Image (cartoon, rainbow, N blue to C red):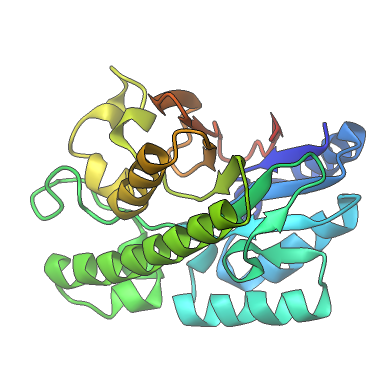
Length: 264
């Protein structure tokens, strides 16, 4: 397993024994590097948790942020903390500023955090809410659902624009196999049909329509390039073939039971 895939570890909700088992499993993979697709823990302990993971992984630890990683602080503060961590520990690489990463196996890796942006389903009328609305400072500052949605869209659109730039740069450099890491699934097809979360009530909170649009457009324009997307967020393990050259893998997860998803 050259690259270990980790996602939705929620280490703040795992016992010390469960965390120790995770680290043992990572060591046993003999992975040369690891990709973490978000929700590692929460803001106050994120840096420590990522540092300990980096101590366990033999090579680089590539990271995108999930919504839970911002709990207890702001988006801006967490991003600043990740940049500072990367300056101290260059093997911990937050993917958006890391740019296009050429992997030893010939693939190219890019990543953005991604935010559920309400572009699918009814974001105002849905009865479902997430703790994001009160635990992430930028969202908590908005008193109405309309205001919170506007913040989500700004964050999602910025990530989508960044993703489009990174994909374009990789393709211009001759990439033919792209590995894309993000936290929020980019397509409704990523939610298992017939499951509770496949109901349209969940779509505004579980899908990033902005990144999905970018991926679908890039894949259509470049049929000779393969796009494999790794995401998490929904906790429902699933694979979706969106088009002949665009596939998405979603990580499964349970609170308190952090695990290695497998190889990337």
